Length: 332
Picture 1 (cartoon, rainbow, N blue to C red):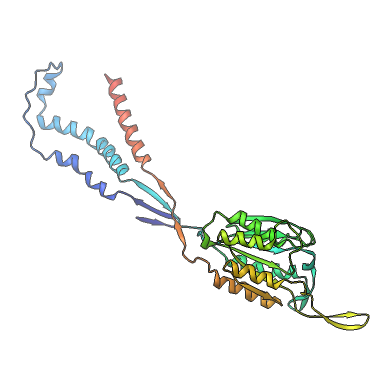
Picture 2: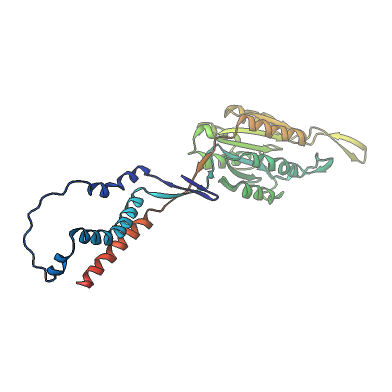
């Protein structure tokens, strides 16, 4: 193999080079005695005047170089030369992870912070999911957004950049004001039911309870368990915040409607885990823990594109032989 800056040149059947000296070895064999019939040659007198060695040398030198070139081209083609390109890293078929994000009206609550600035729960989810998506190299990721109904925003794909862009474009109220947890799980089951059981995961994030949808979360959880879909659930939202009212500053619980019992049940019944995120830092830690629970495949598959080059020497040999026959025909 000969390495160049952009690839390498190699022979797949290098051993075929051993047949190249065969025609020359045949010349070393003793000549066979053959009884030939008489042939009238009109210029026999001129040939007879020449020494036999001269005749042999002229014929041999006339055809030796062209025949050697043609034979070498045939042998070169038999050695199967090929160009091996640079290594291309292929996507690794790891897990299939579906992200289900709540877009109901309660996700506009500003009870969480990013760098000391109060922001909505959805902004925090986007902020934390960006690095999580980037870390899942090798996995197929999909995105489900749910409110009154569940919608498949991005099918399972290796294209993490597109999925991240679709997440960024999601807006509060896009799927309605209520929360259809059962519909989100049912849609994930439908999209992932035919995948291997050990490699499909749903990460469902919500801040409330099921208030919409035609499928109950309990029934959807049973379907998920039957199809081998593992569900990790995340309840997001602070436990207490201080707000100003006409009666003064009061402490309230903005996550009072979060159905933790349901989320715990869905996770435990399907072999997943339930997590509670009361702050941005806790949510970041949760997705880091999911990375540990559902590790990314680290083995890489490498493919080197190969381009066969034998057609060039073989084509040259065929063209040379054809040209030689045409010359003989026209001369006669």
